[in-house]
Length: 272
Length: 344
Image (cartoon, each protein chain N blue to C red):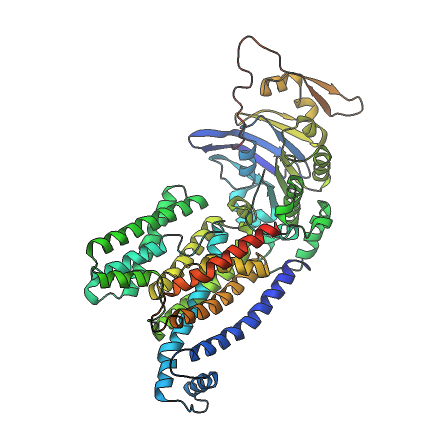
């Protein structure tokens, strides 16, 4: 197993944001994290990235607890793309991608021989070769996202963690980006809102609700009409294409109900 | 990388290579400015004589003016300019705030309270010098700000808020002491000190500040790559392998010690630490390996000239050098902001 999480919990501000989550991702696998806003997807990714320490349980890479790795060794292995980042610094696309070489350099920041090829490769993978001299502040949301992914690839990781990478992207770029990630020879964990994208690209999905694992397994097994109703309180029809194991989810408009407040638990902020 | 960074590194090397001779030349030129009618050749001869090369055909008074008065002051100006510039650059990156300056973390407030306690209340009864009082005040204020920031959660914005609170607190204390206890003469000397002055420069100050600045610059440069990684915030830096908390403590402490040392001998010289990092970044880009040395050289040259203006422009009165840096710094800052707006 490339990534293993064993019974990990994380408390913040007196509440349990991640609740005894266990998961496994095989080498080269792509796991989709899905769940409503505030279900703990981002927090779980931060635990796996080693940015937060689990209050209980453990995160393992190749069977070794990541607390035994230095920040630098971890960064040479695991790359993390946050949901949305900003900067005051006037950087070009190449500058941002070059930041991915930080864990391979000394603290003085001197470049190494491997830097150039790694940066070029990352720029090519993310389709940014023509944008390499553009300034970060002049990029569209989608271009920024691709730049951050190129930065992550420049780290030459074996594990890639992405927090809702398709936010702000148009349909074409969403498909392109997840296609890229699924074809990379990396183990990846991707938090996604779009169930159909998760079904289309992920080898496995894990559904979180209130910080707990509600279901996990292959998209075809997990993404059922019943599950979507339970977790999101939304009605849908799931169609299975005859020649594919990947389901397609068609959402139905909410019914008007006499009682109950649909979706009362989910807020807009996914700060968890 | 062939593009971007490599070009910037080469340009930075060029600026430093041209800047250091320009700095030396500037120092020799400004050493001639003022009463005594010396030439650059005289200054060169006086310096040569000190190192045992040739003999200077200059009066003893001329030699004394250069060696005892002007040279220590000029060197101190260069050191303060370089040190304040580097501290400002590091804090702006570390705290991700383009408005950060070396005095952000309570250092100016604490130094002024310490200085006032010595000048007005006679703390230490003559055993503690003004500089020592200011240094102690600055360090106590910085420690208080860091405790405050840690109690409040320790993040970047908390450090800045704690710094603002600490600065206000110590400024208020300073005002309170001045208003309740100082006579007119003391008030004037406090005000003068607060605006920054290099007029009391001695060789001892030059050696101490020079050594501390050199160590500070080397420590900051040795963390240049980690500072670059802060561009997108602390989580981003951490995921790039930077030990965020250790780095923050190291660099905040080093810049605070350096700033406190400089403030103790020169008073509060504003704007150098705020404006010069922006100017350097405009020239050589945001990479710290390039921008920190350029900031240091620019700061040194700038303060050498501004201090010369400060001591000559209204002769025989001296204008506090902090007034000069503000008068020069504000238009430069506005120009940089305007340019950035056009560029983005």
